[in-house]
Amino acid sequence: MAKRNNAEQIAELQAQAAATRRAAEAAADVLTQDLAFAAAATLESVARHQLRRKTTEEAPVLLLPDNASIAEVRQARLRRAVQRGKDVFLPTWREATVGIPNALLRSSLFSAAGVTNKPLMNLEIRVQGDTSLTLTGHPLGDYDRRVFAACLNYYRDDRPLCPGSELRWVTVTFWQLARNLNVSYCANTHQAIRDSLIRLNAAHLRIRVKRVDIPMPRLLDVLFDDGYQGKDTPARLLKGSDLISFRILESMATLFGPEDWSAVSEAALHDYSGLPAWLASYYSTHAKPFPVKVEDLFRWSGVVCEFREFRRRLKLGLERLQRVDVPEKVRLVAYELTNTHLTVELERWKRSS
Image (cartoon, rainbow, N blue to C red; front, side, top):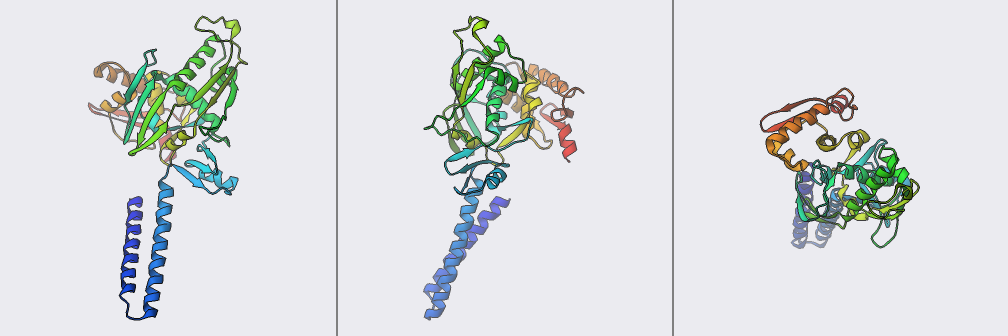
């Protein structure tokens, strides 16, 4: 409603300016004409200012002047991605959470069905809302969402995203990334992280959000400096001190508009797998209960089974998220599952209200 009213105000100012200019042209004396032209110019100036402000407010990435203070940048990043000069920053988020675009969380990109080695070409990803998403690469699962989130978290503070023309790499060890994933380092973890990063590097996306195409070459770029020689690499050649270099390109910022991302808790990311993991991440994008079609959840989650079997798995997943050992930020207090719709209530929603 506010956006529509703002547009109406701009249109009204423009109409008033045009009418005032016509009145000036028809004025009988020079003084009245000059005053009317001045009034028209003022109205046009106000309309242009409001239009620029409206355009800036609606843009996913807020453009700040080169001389914006650090405090101004940090304040703006509480809500959205920001550009200051040549540097583009993701929003900031609280400790023990990771900011992830809603378009990725409300889709089957990180599928609850798990991953396979089957290559995909221009596969249409099921996604909620006025968004289209196409993937070329390999299927992604909840482990890939965890690894992607761990990489995104390195941009939470004052690290700018990487322009395509520059080599701004983030370098970490396999041991450190395993720690970010809340798992112990070992040879199997080394290979799992490596495989996931390769899938994320190979994930070429075509994204259209709110009828605007967003260039997204891939989720991230990655390079390795380790002893990996293939699936049968001896464990002695893999070390926790081996290096990973990755970078996330500036195009990612376009998915972090004011209402386009959510802070997902570490519990939602790391404590579950399969459908419960997808549900925990999906409902991290919600702020209050509302009914969702079960058929839509079936499509968005990416689960591969009969619809009747999905309903059974859905009930099990919801019950898993109701247990007393589930952290408060993720725990379901109650849910209502009808023949067509699901409505859930989270503990954190009750406390925030």
